[in-house]
Image (cartoon, rainbow, N blue to C red; front, side, top):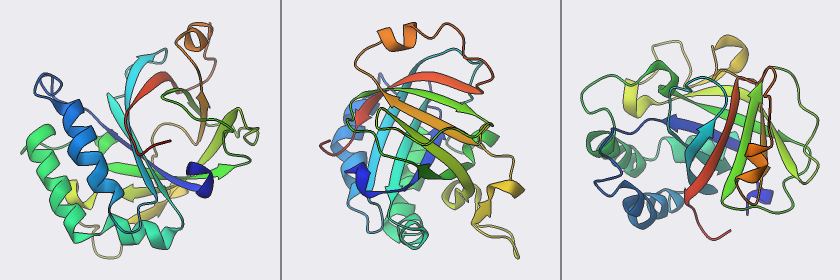
Length: 214
């Protein structure tokens, strides 16, 4: 369960227009998600789809949550040779092929949870990201602080000499927010009820595509 993990990696990506028609989501459930969850160091891996957003275009249509027990376990999973080969195959089959990924998708972001984990989880969430510190999670909502950028070496190559694969967020542009609130909701009505997202740089509704049993 995600209550076992206080660290999570937020990974974003955009699919080509024909990916869904070519069977992307069944492939995620049958192949991609079970494979990721079999990799040593990966505590739990989930695939999510952005359904609606109030903020301007995010630069991505999907994201994944990768829960890990520690930075050491993140390193173990992130550089797994089998996973590297699999991710390069994903790029060829579902990603940007020989083109370069958009800048927003060249790094993933390591987050640390503050406060309690959500008391119940589900297949629909409201994401609200911004740069002001959030109150600790209270059981109905999780509060995550972005602490580091994780280089996608399998997509853009290894870090230059002298640089690290894991960059403190103070020295990186980041994903557009420093704090992420994650609220698990029953249906779309909760997102409909948000009349104004204020200073949020991310305000979106997402639904789960694939994950191990909750």
